[in-house]
Image 1 (cartoon, each protein chain N blue to C red):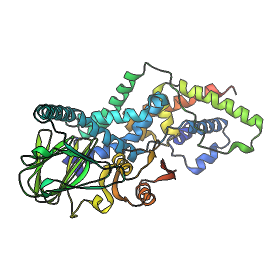
Image 2: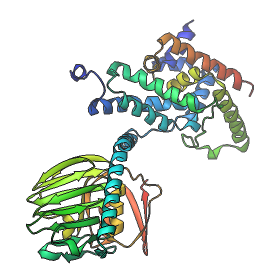
Image 3: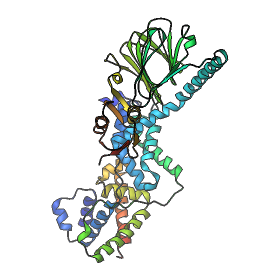
Length: 171
Length: 298
């Protein structure tokens, strides 16, 4: 009902809803695409500030792609294509204390290779893969966020998975 | 072929329990599971949506500031300049100055029976020699005025000029922070080149250049009763006020000072005051002598 009441996003309620809906996805999108060094949260803020400034010209339907485009462009302006560096989190865990030293050594070697392989993936594949495998999003959802077809999402995830397997296989 | 379908379902998070069972001995599936396990370590840091939204709002406010602020600053500078020139050429006597220390409140009797109470860390000056012709004071900090009826009475602060005839009102002027509240009669407030009039029970605030009208229900400003009350005010201004009421050396590195706070703290007991601020904001504090450390609670 309220949807048709607002034509643009100048209303604070609409603006806040757009924030809760998209901020997190946008943040994670930027993180998986560019890595941690660009400070994704700042870019999210920049994009929303721009949206607010242009609120009269942007319809609610267009707001999401506006945000993604602005954040993407702003980030591209800053980096001169740095190598993507993802951060290895110590926390999401499993307690390894009972493992043998040999196992630990193998494991760290594995993670090392895995990190390199993940960073080496094309951006589009990495984003789809991480959203799917880590955040548990379904194909349709990812397709909506990225504005591409479901088939394309499936393909990206599958290719990413195959490449990762290829690169860690030697162990 | 069947297996390919199973993988598709697995990748779309729609694999049933039996289907999962049937994959359990598949070597490739185990590799995929391991990859998924490993990927968890590279999860994006969690974005705290509500606190980042608050930050966005305060960013948006300070952006608005840039344009309006410059015009204010220019006009204020012009007024000060003209005032200063007139003053230095025409009058030679120094104005009377009063200032209150940290944690101290001061009551001043002005000529012709007007009264002013200064809150902690405030200063007020006026020129005795021309008082009969024009009642003018300059204020930095917070003060409550009780002005006897008569010729116009003028209060000048960094951000505003307040003109009254006879009434009670409160003015607080700190950096980026102005509130003017009217407790009796009516007053005129000039901010930049805009003029506002306030009736009894009305208040105007200008925080980070954002102007807001509010109503006040109490007969006196709360600080008169040794309490500082704030409504929807960024934490940084609350901490500034705390540092005016108590002699302390505040350390707040990890605390986000843009969060909005509504509440009050007492001027009579530092411990109670700190609790009133820290508990609702989920902060914790330590006191060592005059050193107070506020940290985010985990």
